Image (cartoon, rainbow over all chains, first blue to last red; front, side, top):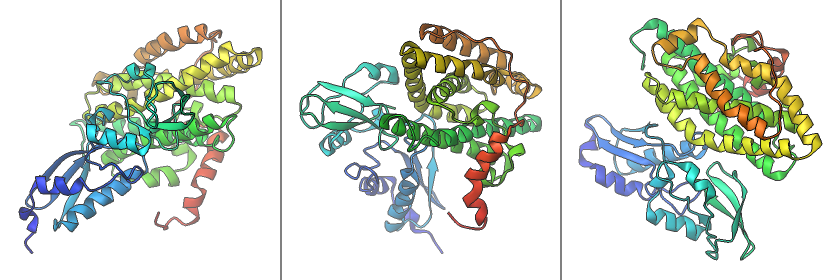
Length: 165
Length: 254
């Protein structure tokens, strides 16, 4: 049984992974989220390295399974999804395209922090609906590990922000 | 397998990572007890998140432990008996009132931050990586509980009194986090984990001024006379609840 892994290139696989969406935020792909660190094609198996966002996130298992299915659908016979913890995932890794998709979805994108999250604690979030800065943080924690809850005083709607990590 | 080159250190590593994991797991369970019962909806959400984060952290530590000991995280969580657990007493104490929960969480979060800030420099790479990951999330916990300490301390007479009482009760339990042992010394000598004395000093540098600024008196109490592995009846009842479903059918697939 000869593996047909050799016919697949890392870039083909990466392109396919761009269609694997985040299970909880279905408008953004795991590639745009900055989750995929590396794809390599070996003699025996294909390795996809990913970095988890929040360690307790229940979507991580689904994402792993989705990656495996995606590569197998391409014809890759043996795929291993490796979790890499170092460097830890940073919300700064979300692509600009991804950030825009979050905003359109109604989720304020995370402020960029350049490695120092504390600097974001004093920033106001722009309302994803009306773009106003007259917003207030209601809760550092939200319906999922990755979101905090805000309220916009201009359009008077609550909204969520993807947390800076 | 990620062992070091020294079998004695490896054995200490198993105990160390297990201790870290058990602290997170038991505290997560206590925090989850507020789900549906917190004083306001925002805190119901906050503590459920904090508990879920802690389960994620426990999971990272159990994975490390099991890589070294060839064990299984589910077995460790659901099928060990209370005397096999390695958490400190502080995390198994009942959740009590809001002031107690906040005081306990604050003292533990501050300890976790100084611990993680040291562990990111561990000479044992897997620990450094896990610490680096956990630290990014832990900062939100500390932010949350330190805000509450201020609110409770400078709020009303009642909020200050309840929290001061909680701090007085908790102080000797917090001391257990910094008790030295040959095991810790061995890990510190090889650069794997920080010395207890360093942790205690760094912890006091944070919590003492902060508590004072929040209107509290610093209790004086000797560390509780206990080592990791000593437990109260609190852990027995906690585990009876936590392990009940899994133990009903040990062969079930989840």
